[in-house]
Length: 251
Length: 294
Image (cartoon, rainbow over all chains, first blue to last red):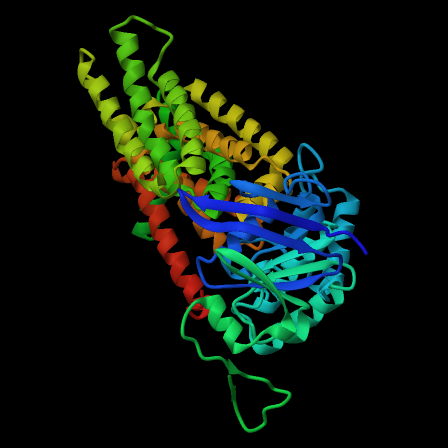
């Protein structure tokens, strides 16, 4: 059996004495695909920041291939939400993707290989012909794919996405999920999301974060589980286009 | 020739005569310094606008009065002749850049309060030094700018600053662009973003110091940000934005100095009024072009 790529043991983190994550154990396996869900303030973003090495744990450890997150940053491609960027920033899609190649030299000048890697990454997300297009002139779905291309250009084998489907229309969301499914053949995909509707069709596992962490196969995702996860009286309305011609199916 | 055309011709002749008159070097120095400064303002102003740190640049510019006052006091009272007000301004500007870089990193939600404290605290200290210095000193020249203060030496300082800024930005362009667009991601790529942020603030501080003679402490922030903000409405890349911002800045300084000469008005205020008017016009044009979409 292969070894876990990310190993989290006894992880604890608090902001100013307020615990956000307590005693977390988690293993992420090669070619894993998992969505990270939970209520606001439950610790999803904190868990991601700890895995990226942007925060240091108060207790426990995170190891990525036996190294600390800060040492293993080059293995991780991080995809933030496109909506957080300045919509007027004058920068081309290729310039955004090239940022993945920063850090290898003192000045940060890009080599021909860097620019080529950026173009290849854009081609992988079907945006090669829009390389010189201003980022601000792209649609939401295209911007999100540019950010995925940036993560691909860094060459890592782990892709962490922070709510990439937020603010996307249904068609763009489906395109994005198809792309992630393709990428999952080679890479680990971890995706923070509030939308659990598509998780059972794409993800293998669901990581529920609400101060503590529980991992379930996506087949176990039910209204009861979501109620427990979000900690309140909650009604699930499933919009399933494949099996519900007469309307909504309520759990 | 119409009366208006004749008057315009006379004014142009007068302006040209003033620019070439050996007894009136201040207008020539002011224009040359302004045109050279446009390069620094275009480049640094673009970074200030896209990184959204104009309030930090504002704090640095206002802190500078503490250095000017301190320099004046040490020169007059303590007899340290080499410690000129401009020496004090450079030291305080760089010091405030270092403090503000640390504040950005550690203060979190209190950042704006600390910036406000430095902003007004720096000005107050400057005024106290000026009040404690014997003799008359008019702080308005530094607050609102006075091209009469510009010397031949300043032209060389501004030219040297242009070279430094062109070299530093030329070398670190990609990294500076990256921290302005996405600092967190840049950090994840192993770039020491805190040093780049400090470098950017120090360059901003030096640019502000050398330009306060033209438009003054209070208005320098407008000349730093407005041309770049106008350029941002039309530019497709940061390089294009820098070039356009430098062009707009040069245009405002040239027309502002010319207009202030004709109308016998303070040059700094005229330059800023022109820049503000152009900015509002550009906003209206941009709104019309995009149909009000943001």
